[in-house]
Image 1 (tube, rainbow, N blue to C red):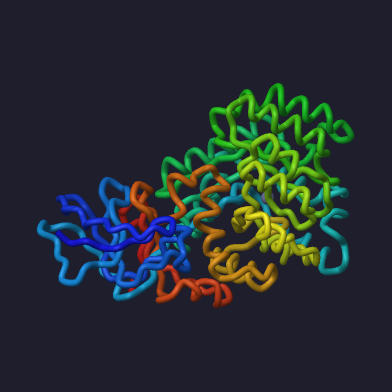
Image 2: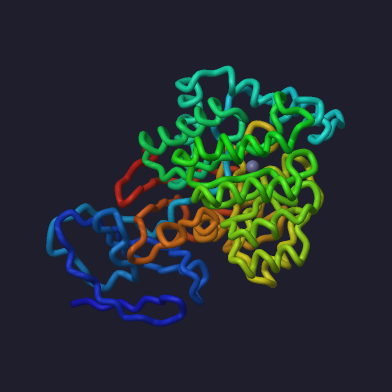
Length: 427
Ligand SMILES: [Zn+2]
């Protein structure tokens, strides 16, 4: 029997290579960035081997010299290339119709995002377009966007509603998310964001809309969603209104998420943390008391450098405070037509390094380990350790830092979901 040393949470554990069975899959000769939080940067294993059984990781470690399988199994040979956990895009709005390129031109001439929103543009223009299309059209456009993410190494995708803002159209969006989960080799987390903005029918009656969301919409959509979210901001919902939405979602068994402190400090992140939110997202204006509340309640910070870049923000999220209080930092695309039309997931890492001064290792953890936590899936995906799903991405790279360095490159070579190859570039 072969034995291999493997670091698990700083403990050097000698784990024997198990006997291979027919039906197993073996990945050999990879630089494996496990992203396990041990003393080795990236949890990296050189000359690594990973064994998959029934879709889950059975064993991972350095390949013992002279090892060979005694039964015929599927094997992939990496030739030293990098293997990482499949990436997780933990904050997207990728189901929508219409486009907002006209607003882009307006913003370049000096009109602010908030001004556009107040005049009925912004989110509401996407709401109008999304209400007009049928479910099939909405599904087809979303499927193409999800497919693009998959080809870039993403195996888990969070998708929010929030462009329907009435019951039939919120249901339509969430059914599209469910259908994507059924038809694509992706894990989809569906989040109801009925409280994205106040719809025109409730103009000037934000409290009434919040009551409608809590009493009518959430009970009717909770079976289609995994989480509830709210946009807590001066141009959207107040702290009290946001609390009502989250409490109603919690009562329906949904995980809690919040868009908070993007354009101003509202206290939304701390409020959501106290209610047990899995994540608070954006956070440019988060202060230390908010950071402490998130640390205390185990809430993950989701930073969205695409929106920061596209809106030409200058207020950088409090990275040092998040580090100081050990709040896990996830990164996501925030893919949406108005404030973050960001198609390259690799660019998310590069932007986070350059705009937020995150390290390449923090950036990779942000789209793997910490993104899993932001969805409440930390025990299933996000790192490569025995027992987790074998969701993997293979890269045309030999070291993990190469993933953050190029601008909008496409280095993903193969994607494996639950051990099965679901995308491969032709070489
Ligand atoms: Zn968002």
